[in-house]
Image (cartoon, rainbow, N blue to C red):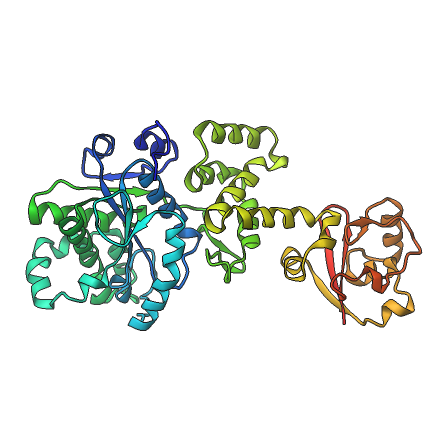
Length: 433
């Protein structure tokens, strides 16, 4: 994979706000003067990654584009223990069979972001590794003697991920989760010894774990390695990024459709869209600054949000699928809605109120005015008439000027649907059964 641009990786990371906390010293010089192998761990507790993983996936890609070698580490072994960080209660431990299925699901998602090799051949391609390959081979007594001796309980208790759990007297933390940070530290040591990995990256909630890994490599072999954390991604109201009322936004198209992913980013608040453009896209710095200006001067045009949604959807699902999604999104307010296939029509109208009407009403003369009132788009038939007269009523996105117009079978999309709209944004999907 070729170098992305003449701009240094350090400058790029700092511009994008990704240089949050450095563990150790000299990372900027190392990134600028040598080729590093760096790793990021990914949670395998589901068969799909979600948008909360996007920042780290993009960070791996940035490293590779600037000539460094990335390692995507799937935590099959540590996933059997569970990271206490950011959790108010202990995780349900996964079986080996569940973990294997989850890893099979996330592999192709990671491969969309970084070029991977099947072997450690020393080339530019990255590696996709799974830590149960070495963690399961560890003997307990050997691990306690050879690794545990480098850390005091005092240090471990003072880590934020542990301390926050200990402060909940009724909750506490099991020894299983308490040992997690030692296992993650061992991951770094193993990757250093076997793959010359000298940089670990993660979210800011991983700072304690990252620092323990750097410390273990230094204490064990005297090597100078590095850690870098990125900021946590939050929404404008301070809540966790990637969550909606409907739940998690997944990268698997079967769990979150490309249209829904596109719409999620299209709805990004003005206050954070600039940060998201930096975190989740590979747009040039000047282009991002231009979108910052457009958002500040003409926020109603949502130019920055459209650029963000297009870029992320393309990264996750490809350019062809993104073009289809954008066309579908535009059809929501155009006559193109009549040309959508049934699945796309339902996807586009997924957030619209829906109601069922007897198909026989199409033969007995259900007027547009009556249908508007029945759906609740207007409060009364008289209000429906005024809306028609003012040119604000649409049937399948075609303006309806006729007060006496009756719906008929010729209006049906896919022989069962009619989309009624009042004004720009209020629409309703009627299903005739």
